[in-house]
Amino acid sequence: MPDFTAWKTDNYKFVGKAFKYAYDNRMNKLLSIVGVAHSKSVDYELTGSGGYGEMPEYDGHNLNEVQERRGFKTIVTPGEFSITRVVGYKQAKIDKSGACAKVGALLGDSASMTVYVHLLRMFSNAFNADFKGGDDKPWAASDHPVASKGSSGRKYIADPDAGTYSNLINLSLSVASITKAQSQASRFVTPDGLPMLADMNLLLVSPELEADAIKICGENARFRPTQNPADNTNAANPLPNLQYMVLGGGKDGFSAKQWALCDPTLMKQMVELVYITEPTVIQNQLDNPLKDAYTAYADFGSGWGDARQIIFSSGS
View 1 (cartoon, rainbow, N blue to C red):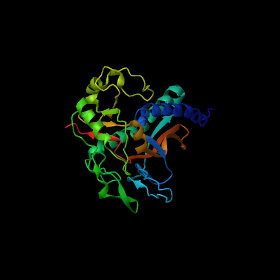
View 2 (cartoon, rainbow, N blue to C red):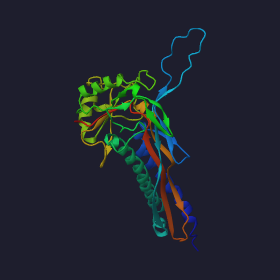
View 3 (cartoon, rainbow, N blue to C red):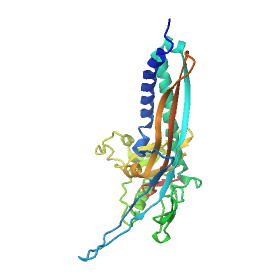
View 4 (cartoon, helix red, strand yellow):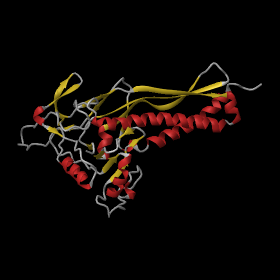
């Protein structure tokens, strides 16, 4: 008599392995500019830059006590996402490894692409006034407050005396526009008044602008997480130290003329993907011995804590 329970145990190793590979493969690129945090709370506090500023001269006797000058705090509230696929006994018996591996890969694609498109939408919503960060401004804005002066509950209040800065230029993509953005970024200061010192060496472009990015950066400048930064094969190009990344797919990400310039190292510090539960595949316990079900599940959110590490352009 066939064992109508053991077959489900054998299935899981195929589904789980395929799921993990599909998820890692999809997320590899974006996680080069987005940090990952794990939380066990209903929400997560993402803070921006801050510090104590320049040290005053010491008189040899009196301590120069100082208070931290802070940026702003963004509250990220992760949400749950799931999808379930049922595998039949006959389907698994005819081609166990092939059928189950396909189910795992498709579930992995669904899970990874769900996280991926949410991250793309975070970037495309940078220009949307309805999506504001902890400083009460959209990510791309001409009037970001430089620092906060205190908090009211969990919300930080802008310090009007600290001034504002703009990370929005609204110019079409060109060498001149990029160099202008780099010059603009060189004048940014942290909340405590020190130079930001951002290395704006990664160009983010829409799929429509990739051809222009190649002309500016060179064919070998497409960003890869394992690329050697010392490999200067684009010396003949206008901006040989600049790499580029396409930030868009389907209906999500940058629209045709949108682009941005960023410091990828600071991006990973200031922009985070927050997981309560990373994408995983769960084998369901069904009463029907002829059906085996697998659920892809994730609990995540994303947000940005600072805007100084990236300059956006709507392209117009």
